Image 1 (tube, rainbow, N blue to C red):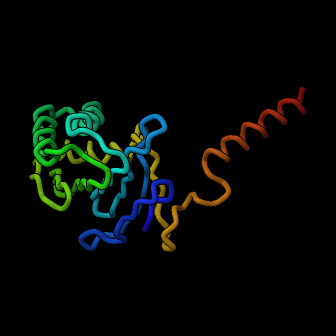
Image 2 (image 1 turned 60 degrees about the vertical axis):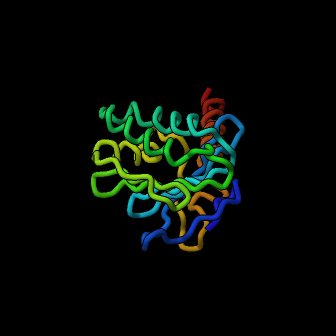
Length: 174
């Protein structure tokens, strides 16, 4: 399956778990990476723009900090990720984060960099892409491989239509 705005493809299954959602992390106008979420709580990030190791690690750690009270686990996470990115995260790098079983597994380009045994940390990592303050919008993947919101009525269009209807209703009533 391919994330449409980056053209980055994701396997339909990862270790037997189906791809359920796709998203893109933007920093300004730059598409930094595409992310796929699998049903087992695994998140696969594929870089569409090269980023230095420290910058990538800091960005993810900064996203974890308001969601995780376990500072020591965040430090261990940063150590594991930095060790896996000796040349940074150039375009095409694949990062996989497994959040199941009360621990956060970290792999870079299919090489395991270790796990951090912290239920709080693994839950916080998943919430980077799931909670109301998620770093990017995630869209459900349908059986046809398309995202659920790829039709005419996207959230942005719905908001614009709703605003226009509200404005016109206000004009009609006054």
